[in-house]
Length: 352
Image (cartoon, rainbow, N blue to C red):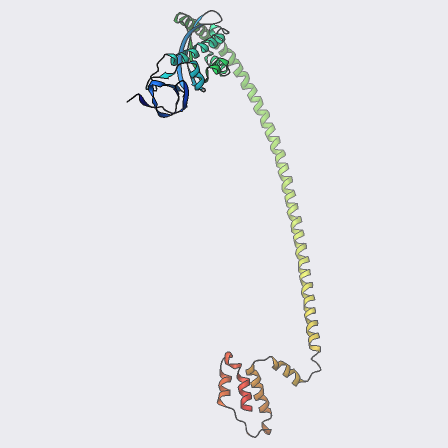
């Protein structure tokens, strides 16, 4: 409508929009509206592309050959390609207005053919038909560093030469020659096999005799080796027994020393304890029994103190006129340890 159109390209295409002789926008995978009467849309595929090829060449010995394969390339500088070839489209991204997009692939094939010819002409027919992979590797390395490709904004990603074949007449001749050579080889193999069988029988007999001699020699060596091994084993066992005996002797000696040391330590400890007890009791030898009894009672249980008080009363019963003991005091003496702490206080209160 009114000359305004819409275009949308995939990410594998680089689009350039020219309007009024000036570049308005450029990029991969763009979509936009444009005014067709004053606009030019250039769409360049930047994804990888495969180009099959087949061409004829001559080997070093002037034999015709057919080289067949496939070239993979991509455009790395689309704006440079757009400046060299016409990639203008008409409304649709793949509807080109010229045949220039097909020219790029043909230029690559022409360059490839020149490089392949240079390699093929270095080899004779028999060698070149077996060297397709080597030729492909050499040509691929040359194309990667080619200034002609760089000036086109293109780089080669892969090159595969699927076959290098001679013409049918030459191929049949080679097949016949190879077949005759194989038959001659087969006949010669039969004669050689017959002659070899006789020679082989003689060698077998010699080998049998040599084998018997070698077996007897090996048996003798085995017997000698076994005797030597038995002597070594016996010697090692004797050393082990001596080592074990020495270890047991040392262990018993250590045990004897341990028992002696333990006895000496026990004796020393008993002497020390006896001396400490004697020194402790020496201070108490000259004290009165009553004083000793008082010292013992100071830290005793209150019930014990009350019992000792009753004992003193019993010893002085002749001098006591009347003694009153309240039931509360007896009840406190019969209670558990939690209430016994109050017994002296209660007894003292009754004495008062």
